[in-house]
Structure formats: C-alpha cells, structure tokens
Image (cartoon, rainbow, N blue to C red; front, side):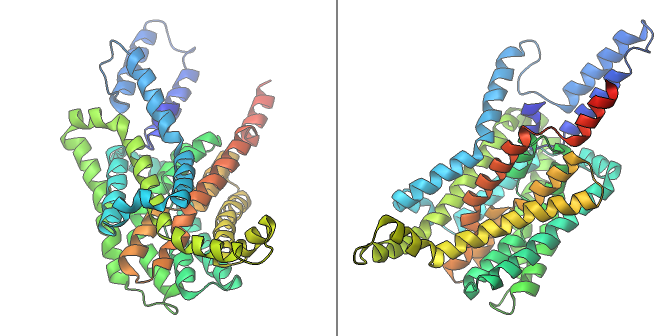
Length: 407
C-alpha cells in the first residue's frame, strides 16, 4: 500500500474496500471463493496499473519501492538545497536567470505529474462518500491560514512586501508533500489527497480574492492576472495530465512511477532557487554583524535573527504552527476521527509554497514578496516531517479503542 500512496493518488481508497471485503471471506461458500478472489485480483490490477507486466512482479516492486523512498525524502532535498544556496548561491543561477518563466514551467510540470496520477472519476466518487470531512478540510484551509498570516504579519510588524508575501503564502492551497507526511503520520491519506486536489483546483478563485482582500491595502493586487496565472500553471496541467491518462494509458503507465520523484525534485529546485536569490542580502547582514567590534558567535546570531531574516523565519514558523495546531483542534471539536484530524491538521499546515513563489515572482515587483514562500519550503517540510514522525509512534486513538474492544 505504501508505494501507491506515495504516488499522491486517490487510488489508495479502493484498498480500504479490499480490506473490508476480506472480512467477509469466511461466510462465502467454497465454490464462490475462487471466483471472488479472481475478480478482486483483476480489479486490483486495473485500478493500480504497474509499470511492468505481471509475470515477474519482483523486480518492478523493488524498483517502485526505491522510487517511493526517493519521493519521500522531499524534506531532505529541500534542506540540503537550502544549505547549498547559503554556501554557494551561484549553484542555482542558471535557473534563477531564466525566471520567472522557469518558475512557472516548473510548477506546471509538478501539477502535470500530479494530474497523471489522478482519475477524476475515482476522485468524485470518494468526494460523494465523504463530503463533510472534505468540505470541512477545504474550508479550514482557506480560513485558518489566510487569517493567521494576516494576524502574524501585523503582530511582527513586517514590511509591506514581506507581509504581502506571508499573506500570499497563507492563501495558497495545500501542497502535495502533505500526502507523504500524512502517510508517515498514520493519518487519513485518501482524505489528504482529495483535499489537496480540491484546494488546488479552488485556488483559481480563492487565492487571488483572499490575497486581494487581506493584502490589497498594502500593495496593488491584480485579481484577474493572479487567477489567470493560477489557471495556467495549476489547473490546466492537472486536467491535461488526467486527459493523457485516458488517451494514452500505455505511455502514462511507463511514466507514472517516475512522476512523484520528478515532482519532488522540481519542487525542491524551485524553492531553493528562489531562496538563493535572497542569500546575498542575508550574507550582507551577516558581514555587518560580524564586523561589529568584539562580536561573539552568539552576538552575531542574535543580531542576524533579530533583523529582517529572523522576523521572516519566526513569522513562517508561527504561520505553519497555527495551521497544524488550529487545524487539529478544529477537527477534534467537530468530532472527526483521529486519523482525519491528523490529515486535516497536516493539510492545513502545509502550503503549496511553489505556487506562492511563482505568483510572487510573476506579479509583484519586489523580490521580497517571494521570500516567505521560499523560506516556507524549507521550514514547512522540517516542521511537518517532525510532527509526522512523532505521530508515527503514537497509535491513533480510534484504532486503540477498536483493538481493545476486539480483545
């Protein structure tokens, strides 16, 4: 099940039904048992196409496991890329010099990879089965994070450009990395996947209008252009990928195992490239702090963190913490199960920082607007992964109660 879920697809939902079918195996009569098993096997192969023919399943399974493991290391890629950007910003200059066109192309490639793994019919069926939890998660996404971004930015007294960047980050949809993090945290992965898709499609409307409402007083915000860009780099590639899956199933079957890895590496490149643009400013502040007379290491760090960089880092940390915490509390108060609470918490707390970077570099003249989304790519994944690994060793309370009743 793990390799399928790491492909960020809603295909994991039929596996839950397969598990339920297994519970009904004893009452079946002997003649019908082989037939039901055969039908179930055919259904599994049809819904979960494998990149290689079924006769030798051992080699592709190991290869799929390797690709899934590579895709799950997204936080490591972003962190390593951020370190490289700090030590040698010129590493990403070839990509930065082609921006913002290179940024838009990268995000479009990420969304295309996401579309290749989606079947809109299965997505719609899952939405009809669990409309309340999905709608709750989407509403929480576009209320908790935008409001928190505006309040946190004003509280820390961010400059207009940084405040707009933080608000733009808060108004972005959930990121695809949240699906992997939810899997690690033993959360409700199908719910996380559907929430990601729904909030991403809804970003065409909600992201521009919420940014205009909350940030329009500080910097002019062109709602029409933001909506058009979101439609071009997000919705269109997703729909194109879904269409290619139907029109060229054999070709997509060959590409599909590589889609998550391509999306993860491209997203890491995008975030680290934008972050490297602002490293020069950070280094100048470090130099000025270091040149201070009799400055110790602690004094230098304190001077840096108390400056503009430190305020941005602290603001982004508080924003994601608010998403994780308030999302979980809101889901708990509303009576959702523990696995659903974890999925909603992670989905609300983890934003599509790549979309924030693309919109910031394409529609705002100040380069500082893109700084909060770029910083978020590193900070968000570290926070989300840490939370997921903590939850991984805490069994969901619903399953604990079920096991006790079974005993």
